[in-house]
Amino acid sequence: MTGPRAVVLVGGGQASAVAARTLRRRGYDGAVVVVADEPHRPYQRPPLSKEYLTAGDSSALELLPQAWCADNAVEVRTGVRALKVSSADGCVVLDDGSSVRADAVLLATGARARRRPGLGADRADDDGVYYLRSRTDADRLRPRLAPGGRVVIIGGGFIGGEVACAALARGSAVTVLEAGPVPLARAVGPRLGAACARLQWAAGVDLRVDTAVQGVRRDGGRLLVVTSRGEVEADAVVAGVGAVPNTELAADSGIEVDGGVLVDDRCRTSQDRVFAAGDVASQPSPGAGGRIRVEHFDNASRQAAVAARNILGEAVTYDEPHWFWSDQFGHNLQHIGHAAAGDRMVVRGSLDGDAWTAFFIGGSAGGDRMTAAFALDGGDDIAVARELISMKVTLADDILADPGADLFAAIEELA
Image (spheres, rainbow, N blue to C red):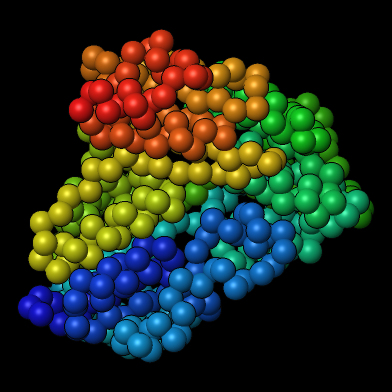
C-alpha cells in the first residue's frame, strides 16, 4: 500500500504494541521497528502492581511475542535508547551509535516514577526505598513483601492501594501514609475518597491520613519514615507519588513539549510525520477545558490506534472519554470521563455499601451533560456513563440515583 516505507515506534509498552498491531492489521507492509530502552521485550504495565507483583508470573506480560513479530515482520530492539528524531535525515538516532530509517515516528516513551527528595539514594532500592514503574522495579520489590514484614507506602493513590493489596496478599503488615485528609481526593473528590479509605481500613491497612512524609532515615538496622506525626518503622518503603513524562527525546528533537509532548486530536506533534501517544502525550480535551495527559492503559491503546491510522494517511481524531480501572481489596474501581469543578454528583446506591456509582453532571460541559462517573463494583453503570458522555446528554437525577432503574432502557428512550 502507499504511505511510509518505514515506521519507528519508540517505547516498549502498550502504545507501541498497539500501534504495531494496528499498522499490520490495516495492511501496512513497510518496515516496522520498535525501539525499547529496557532489556525486556514490550510488556504491559498494569499487572506490575497487581498479579505480577504478587506472584511473579510473566507469562501474561508480553505484548509482542517473538512468534507474532516473526510472522508479521516487526523488528524489536531492546536495551537501546533513542536519542533524537532527525526529520532532515529521515532517521531515529540510537545510543549505540546506529540509526534507524524512519519515514514516520511514534513517540511512546511513557513516564517514569516521580522521585521524592529525602527518601534515600538515587537508586532507591539501595536504602530499602522502592518505586514501581517497570518490570525490574517489581522484581526488586517482590522479595521485600514478605510474611511478617512491615511495608510502608507513601501516597494513597491508585498505585499505592494496589501495592498495599499485593503486600497484604504476601503476608506483610501495611501502613499507607497519605498527606491529604482522604486518599484520592484530587482524583475523585473528598466524599468518594472517604469511601475508598473505608476499603483500606476494612482490609486491615493502617491508613494514616493528614500525614506528611518528611524523609526516611536509618537507625542502626531500622528503617524509619519520618512524618509530621512521628516516625514509622519499616522493612521496606514504597513511594507512589506520581509520574514524570519522558519528554527528553522530543525536546532534544525540537518537538514542542509542555508538561508532556504536545499533540493535536490526531496525535500529531509539532514536527511533521512524528506522532505521540500514551502517558507522554499531552492532548487537547474540550471537556477538561484545556490539555490533559492521561496515564492509563485504555488511553494508551486508543491513542496508539488513532496515531497508527493517521500515520497511514487516514484522518482520524481521538475524542473518546478516558477510562481506567483499579482492582483493590477484593473490589473493582472504574472511572470514566473528566469531572470538573462545579459538576454536581449523583450517587447510585450508598457510599457506605459494597457497591455504588457516582455520576458527575454539568459544570464546564454546560447544562445537564454527563461529564464523568466513578464506581465501586459498578461496571454496568460505567458502560452507561460512557454512552451518555459520548451522546453529550444525561438522564434525570432520580433515574440515575435509583438502584432499581434500568439505565440501559432509559438510554434507549433518549435515542
